[in-house]
Image 1 (tube, helix red, strand yellow):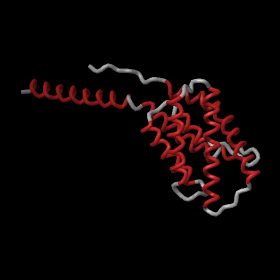
Image 2: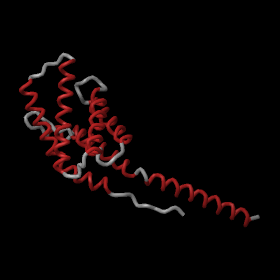
Image 3: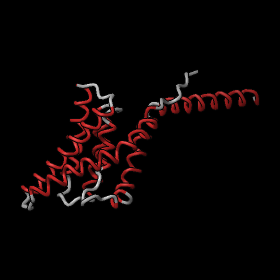
Image 4: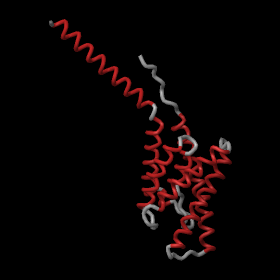
Length: 195
């Protein structure tokens, strides 16, 4: 009887370890997404603390959108929309626009960046930089148009200067971060073969 109980316990442990191993195998597929989520939360934290003080002529870098655009080179569209939704919600919480506008804008711009990166080869850093510059400029134009339609005042000369300067500042602050993110996100998870 004792041998039967020991055998049953051994079988249960083997099944438990087998299930844990399969669960670990399934979680290995989402390692890059978990890293990207962690990177996004660190960027959200840095955006409100460190990058808030990096203003040049009242233009501060839009690191959240730059990170989301960078993610468009690595992830499928369904993951990008989720990341853009989180980034947009955060941008809405610190923005003067009505709640929801930044979320819609982030999702639209990330889908645009993904479509551009699918149509053209964007392996060159100059092409990525140009794409980032124009998408940030488009973001600034959309935000100013929304503010204008909601009854805000926009000084055209100052706005264009700040929009172009903000795009340049974002580009210059995002380029070093792209190297770090590229190294962090391009590492493939260790492939474990099932037993």
